[in-house]
Image (cartoon, rainbow, N blue to C red; front, top):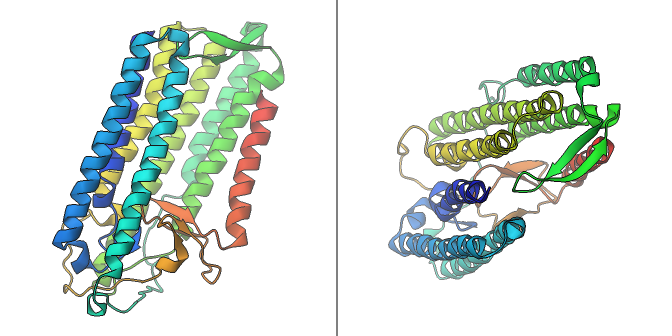
Length: 367
């Protein structure tokens, strides 16, 4: 099973590393390494050079980590490979955080050297018809399909309950070997369906947060900005619905394997390929849309005027948004693609803690 581990490692982390490497080219043109800048400054020679430096630095760092991980997997027993891969994930996250922090610090210092006239006054554009006049997300009614699959899977599991072995395989290692079993019961059999319902709820909540997230428009070209931002939300909402469906189908597949056991190789391949497909689709979508839809519809057709909201004081380390005065719970990320929460609002903490609590409780009930 060594080749499956290597294939999964390369197929999963090469695209992921590529998305991290290209992060400065995916953000809005009014943000550079988590710091607000004008569009003219973003395209200036010093920042173009800084972005190239970021690409080289992160490429070397992630490349060295991947090569070291592959070499380690060649030299250690198969049973230790999961630890090697887990360590690689931790090091990749740590390296990304350190690199981002270094370039965020460099960007803050560079911005401090800019003359005041290069920084335009803060201007905020608001379209009062943005939510009513545009289709921003796919309806949560699409998740009725996901729910129907979960209920059908539960019904089939109950109908064929007698065919399910008395001892269930609950956990596997990277080699497909069983590491934990449990006695058959209605709780263990239907636990997968409970997790399906929890996932559906999380994906529906994510879809709702995409709809309710704070609008961020360009005052210099509001119409194009509205179209791009609406398309950006719709595409990620569509991905959210599709990813949710794939995860629900994966859990149904695992439950089917309880009734009609398949080969270990087939189980491993399907279990690895489904999450991999979701990751690849997310990366393709990130590169095709950019943050806020900046890559949708070709170059900007605005007047060339630059407007930027100088709210750096609310962005801790360029990544964490903390603004108690802002009523919005969800805002666009400054680094990467997607949205984050406003940690200055109690509702955001309730939202995060609530999701975590539901996952933990469901996992304990299902195990």
